Image 1: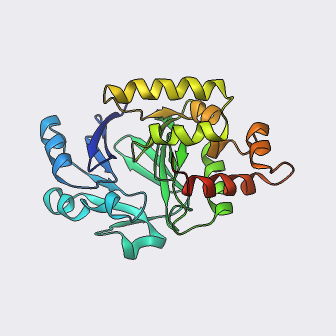
Image 2: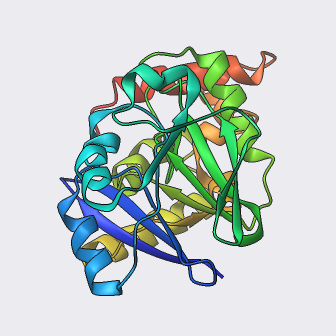
Length: 256
């Protein structure tokens, strides 16, 4: 059983420490900064063995070099983005398996937010670390990819077991919920989730991880098949990725 420690950082980032006790292995996923990671490692008595980067953005790799210098850990990231990952040691591709002690993480290729975005899926733990591809009630902006590509990435996540816990890299759920209600205001599961999220954030409690099951029921970026969303957008009878593209376009200019 993995021990997963969620570390808030910067304004709204989450860094994750993943510890496999039997093999004495510990990974940090997307270390925006090094200091809180080093502090948590010291408090837990863990030795950092791996850095797992989902993509190259500074708020995901900013702590790489300092952590590597102080712990001699190995930095794992996607091969096609090796020029933009500070300190990369291990280059990975779709389907590769990363061993963390006695636990395994499968690499999923999920481009769209960036051209080299990956996710790490610990199947035995029902845990997906997806960076900025999928958020609570949202998904990442298309900075380097296009809508059809991003939808293919989200479909890959949609196909995972519904009990999968989604560990994304930002606390965006409450803001995303306001947009989600614009897309599907009659969705009762969404209404209930938005109320639950508001109560959690009022107490400064994280809304992450979420379950894939609840994302499938409430996240408009995973629901382009919804007839209510399609009617609202005037996009009946078109491919799901085209509906997704319009949802993403509207979110980009949403002022709520």
